[in-house]
Length: 218
Ligand code: E4P
Image 1 (cartoon, rainbow, N blue to C red):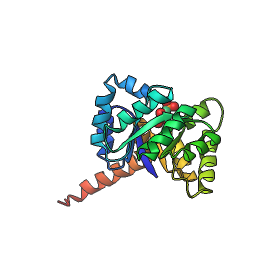
Image 2 (cartoon, helix red, strand yellow; image 1 turned 135 degrees about the vertical axis):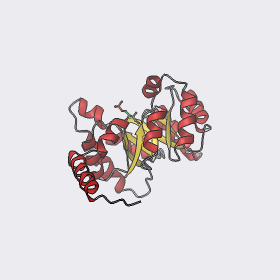
Image 3 (spheres, protein in one colour; image 1 turned 30 degrees about the vertical axis):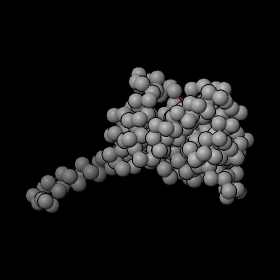
Image 4 (cartoon, rainbow, N blue to C red; image 1 turned 60 degrees about the horizontal axis):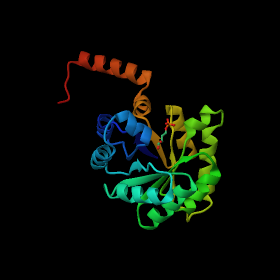
């Protein structure tokens, strides 16, 4: 399973990138707004910091402008995945950009039907939003399971299932059990994944017992 970090904060990305566990980054207009920084500057910095795909989202909703925005974003770096919404204009843009070799991440997916269309449009990633489905009392993970099952029926679909709107470490575990390709995880959730109180206690005991031996490894 690949981990993308769901943030536009450079310091957070740098800190997690150092672990060697980060396979990519996703941003969206809300995260860019939260960063308070210039969109192009942030995306350029992230794409030079991380080798894997960096999602940068178009802002317009009509096809002509969306396509131009997508082409401009794709020029920032070779690891940019242009993010388009799951609309008719978005999928039309996805098809054209994908046919030209640009990675496209189709976002705001809330149904299996939408995911089928995105795969047919050549998307590199489909982003179903589990947290936002849970928020309205639908089981987001049921959607991940349906999409993974459907894509497995069609080996010519090369679209990766990118679990988005992740809110907790349990979302990551459930997505991994289903076999989703990628989870894009907020930094806070990724940090939580490292932690277990028994690890902390065990390490404190081992450290104190080692000190008592009076020995040193180096
Ligand atoms: C990432 O690609 C999505 O934009 C993001 O995961 C959405 O998360 P949210 O529902 O917590 O805003």
